[in-house]
Image (cartoon, rainbow over all chains, first blue to last red):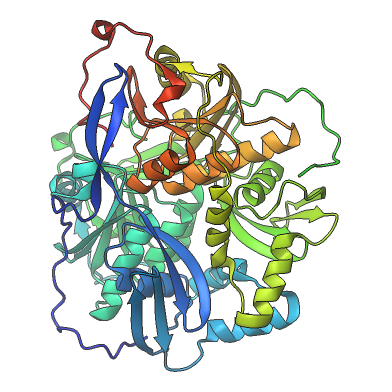
Length: 295
Length: 295
């Protein structure tokens, strides 16, 4: 997919922007003593996404970066193919509608029309289409491909949670970070972990950033959905502060994705694709910690 | 909505069933030392839901209680009205398909057919339909309605996380508990917090349990989605271990739902509907704890 919108060639570094009061509002709550207590809570709004004239989905989001959310969603759900050309993205803030327009009808829309003529609306079959698309994407580590050290994973797991963020300000929000080589390029946050990763996909599309040599850090669990999105983006390694589902781990093994979960402090567990990780510590320098307290 | 399926009149108490190896599988991971480490991870499977001949959605679920998940999803999304009669629910485990059949075409299907004839598939508009439906449901506390004490909320927040569960066994799963009065009726877990609450809605439908006098406990964040589902179920109070979004809190205020969040140990914060809570502690018996470390 290519986009004719004129953008700077060097991707801007994106970091969370807490403390502006734009994405949080002050709420008054009452505590267990019956006393009033004020705190910040993240905002959440509904934005309805159209692909040309086709209504696709209503997304609950904090509402920053709607363009990247829309493009990334369509891309990660395989609703926009590599060769489909985006003419523009229109966001109507008042109507909470975002429309992605392509130069011609997309293959997804053609399929939908066919389905509607036969058995009615079938947005649910997106899942089957995505799984079909996944089978052709293999990102197994090959000799010469980039590797990351265990100490880099530990550094990321320790440092990213310290970066000022909406999470640190208000909680109840997931973060997802795109790392190229060892450099943080973009850190997005959103109500759902899938939105944060979709924004990364949209950002990558606009700046034509390849997934190769990149890794993702996420605060969210590594379910099958997160594994599918990562593979769709061509990103070979994902690091999460949280755990995995068995299907998430299995899909990662089948596609060659390196899946690192429960990464907190010096701890982490690799569930798939360990060839991408260089164990650079003598065993006795690693802290012995328990995995038992990790959700 | 009524269901002609014959069921015992007394609802069975549902608790998680860990340790059976049915909903978890052993995964082998590699730790930061390069050593193999075995642990349990929850399974996750795709089940595609049909309402009669209409494909609705593909749900990622641990896969227990598909009947309740299907019925509850349709109910909470306002795809099944109060007066629509379910003839049966067929689950084909091999095909991973579940079909809910009603005695006639539902209003949702009629609307879909109309929309398909005019502007194509529009499952996204479900959201607008749900929000319309919400406006007519007000569950403001009225004099004489049930109240719960602060010490009951604290007991729930302390005790539920101790109940043996998939979460304690494997992590990476959300729980949702239906409490009638002060008695735990059903504790469901699922990969997504929305699935766990949908299973409760399905269970309530089958046993014709009214939301009145009930409360929900959930491990998940109180986003607008959770508030909407609770109100759709007629449940007047929700207690969460996690935080809220601002829109979640606002919707709760508008509908009269009592929203209790960040309930851990003796702490909790009420964001809406505090009239349902009796502050039964002298102020000096409450532990002074910090809210800062709470996601």
